[in-house]
Image 1 (cartoon, one colour):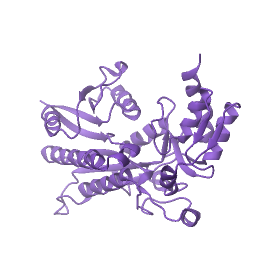
Image 2 (image 1 turned 90 degrees about the vertical axis):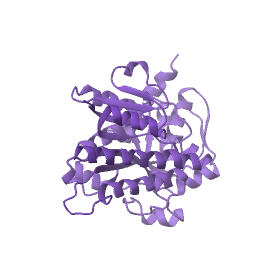
Image 3 (image 1 turned 45 degrees about the vertical axis):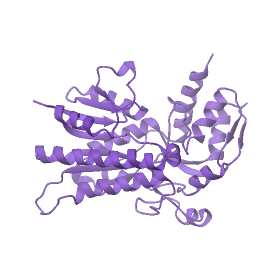
Length: 338
């Protein structure tokens, strides 16, 4: 008899590792994780880890042959910077990989006669706002259905995958009113995510942690966006909590398939001031990069997460002050302490 499991793709990243620890702590859960890379040693034994490519159909077939998948946390993706350089590969990984998993979830549902939950992290990159000065002044906190006109391949991929999830969750083979929903698709649009535990890797919103990493090492830092740029952010622990909260929310209380979540919104200058308060010798200047600046200019200065608050009581634990003073700065400073 096949074991019932929760599948996590992209599991070797920080969010995936945190989900493994949380889900495995419940003795009722069996976790299967999947990534191109192996897991850290401290996670061995918490999941059955599969090293492989999401686009390998034989690998997915093998997973289905061995396990009954109860829920899928689909974290695997080619991120924003890499997607701009290789848009065709981004489409394969981000769209075709998601489609393959949605089809897997549908097949699992048909075999078992019950809905399969599909949790999907989306992004602020799905938004694209023209004429920054005018549009950002009028739309200061953007709702889920506004300005869905992404400017990047990553944003296009994420928006299309949201639509695919809604299609499989609401319309695919729904020929009769009594037909059960086969895929319980739930997505979160994350703002800029800030982690204290990983080194920034060139993401579009990484100027915030890059400032702290440079200051903690005593190195000067040239920020690649203007001082007045404002976007929403969230600490990584809140990102993990929001995925779990959405997964646990009763289906009947959800009015949407896709929800905005956010914690706080800051300008690049305000982030600099928070860093300098802890590292008075920090040298932070602003030298905007034209391409990356254009991407950030197309994002809203803040997003409206009132639907998440109303439907499943979403509340972040980390505001701006706590994110920097309790989470980011102490942990990053410790990384470079001699």
